Amino acid sequence: MTEPGLPTYRRSARTDYRMWLLLIFGLFFFWAGSVVRPEDNCSEDGRECAPWLVPLAQGLGAIVALGAGLNMLANPRRGSLFDPATGELVWWQARIGSGGGDEGRIHLSKIGKLRIVRGDESDDEVHLYDRDGNRLFWFDQEVIPWPYESWAKKLARMAPQIEVVVED
Image (cartoon, rainbow, N blue to C red; front, side):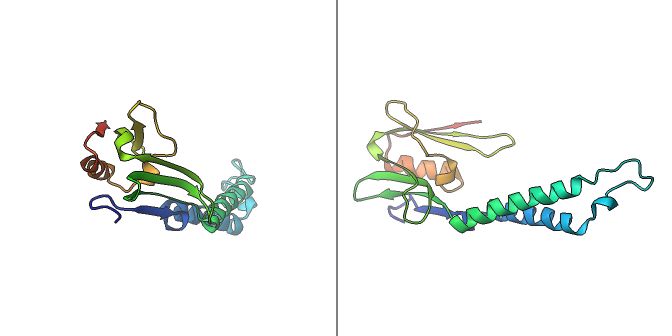
């Protein structure tokens, strides 16, 4: 932790369960396309036949597995931290190797609002605004730890002018 109550958060593609799920999904479809013969993909009476589905599933599986594998090989990182030396909140996405990626920073005194929008069937969204009401680039739910409300409350304790809004 860099400041009491506000933890440093770092995540990479190799530690993201979603990348592993995509890799497993792609490898499964690639494997299934390898063991199922296209001519076996017909009904018993032979009326319903789609032999093109097997190579299509194998190709899509290969593309998904290759994409997930390359992403994990490149290992882009994302995260956030509070820098006590400057008093700034710093966040980054798509950082590969020594490259900076997409980065943003703002002094705590210039933050106006942190808005959390709860999704019904999808992930929640997180938006950070400065005191002029401008949404800050590259700051979203990917750069802070879950539960987002808990992190937002810790940030608001550090800078009481920050309004935390939770929308359902």
